[in-house]
Structures are given as structure tokens and as C-alpha cells.
Length: 117
Image (cartoon, rainbow, N blue to C red):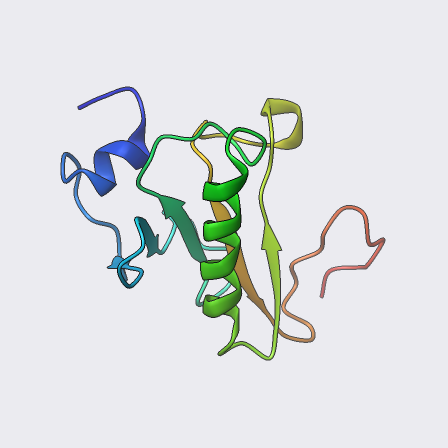
């Protein structure tokens, strides 16, 4: 196993997570995170090791394309990525969270001021 869990997953060195799938012919995978925050929560991860969304705009754009495709089936969703530990990036490999949302789901984002149910 290497230093990057997402590299290990896409290179077959670690077990494939739930709902793992490759995204068409593009070098991107989608899968359920270890601790999904809502049902259907999906990570979009490039095969290439790219540290974060600032590192390679083409890889970042490709991942955003697949995040938007994943969100097509969701009435409401958040698409979130973080850059750096202070912004809660826990794995230093670009990944986008596609989080399905519904009224009263109890998931509050810190900048909204909403009250959890």
C-alpha cells in the first residue's frame, strides 16, 4: 500500500468501496465514502494523484463534470471540495463530495446558519 488511500483504491491496491464505478472512458472513479453523511453521498476521484483543486485545472474540471453528472439524479445536492487541512481536506488527493440533500435531513453547513432537525 502507498501513501495515498485514493491512489491505492483506483490502482487496485486497496479494496474497492461500496458502489465503486469507473466514469465512462474518463480516468475518474465514483464511490461511497467510508462515512456517508446522507444516503447516496458519493466521492468523485481522479485516477491521477492531484493534491487538490488548485493543482491541475483540467483534472479538476473533469471531476466537476462527473460530479454534475452524479447530481443529475438528485433533486437537491451539495458539491463540495476542500483545499488544505484548515478547510477540512483530510486526504490530499483531489476529491469532490456529491451530497444528496432533502428538507429536514439534519445536515447543517456551517456557513448557512441553519438549525439541524
